[in-house]
Image 1: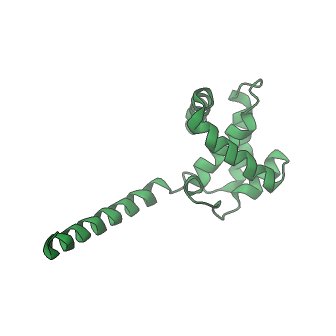
Image 2: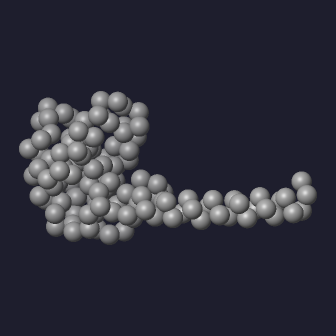
Image 3: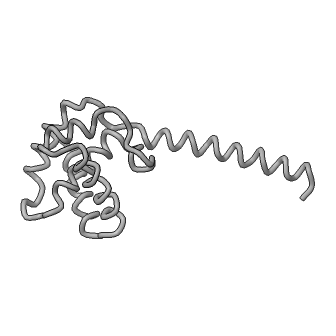
Amino acid sequence: MEIAEKIKQIRWLRKQAELAAIEERMHTQPARTDLSEIRHIHDVFVSVANPKNRDNTKIFILLVFFMYSPASFVNSRMCKGGVRRELAKVLGLSKNAISIYFGDAKSLLFTHKGFREETQKIYDVLTQS
């Protein structure tokens, strides 16, 4: 490859990386920021979720992280901001349990169609309230 062509390619790649970074920031902005609302979201969740579903805790945790910390889905570590602590308080679980459930839920979202459909159904209701 000629020097000029290689430089053009590098410039094009740099521009694509900048555009991707802008788009990533847009998609990782939290829809909600007030952690005190998590208890109310849980109340609504309980009223619409199927009480027989054994995955309700995982679904709720996943949805809260999606609303409050979407970057947690692509980072190797959970983002700071107190979401895990507040979830632990609302659900009566340890922060470690929240992390474990969140990891399981992320996996189930992409591998289990029923989990994905139930999660989407509940999310649609939660975002309308």
